[in-house]
Image (tube, rainbow, N blue to C red; front, side, top):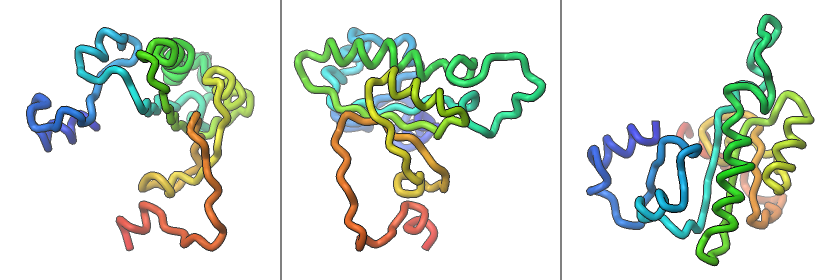
Length: 166
């Protein structure tokens, strides 16, 4: 969907984008430092990620399935690929530039999946209401190596949804 919006706004290529604009890459499993360089987005300063979560969310009916669920499920394996392969590779090979990372995903139905996700990323999980960041109301997990700051209690409760639909 991100690619479709960008193509609609900027054309089939990236000619309408500023050189420092976003780049989209279809499959993180094939992404390498060489490919990041070819896309003119290396070194990386901020890495954002979200991955499919069908097998870790509580929304999937697993009562009749024999397929693995949780992080081993087919629809959620990309999280481990990102967390155990791509992110550590980039963190170790980023031309000496500190890598800021923000990873978002659903709060897993099984607590052990949340513990495993934190362990794989070597980052703490923050539970947050998604409406703070997106136009949806649901609990999300955020993993980041950037410091979180406490929001003062008297801060108005403004969410993206309240701005989009006043």
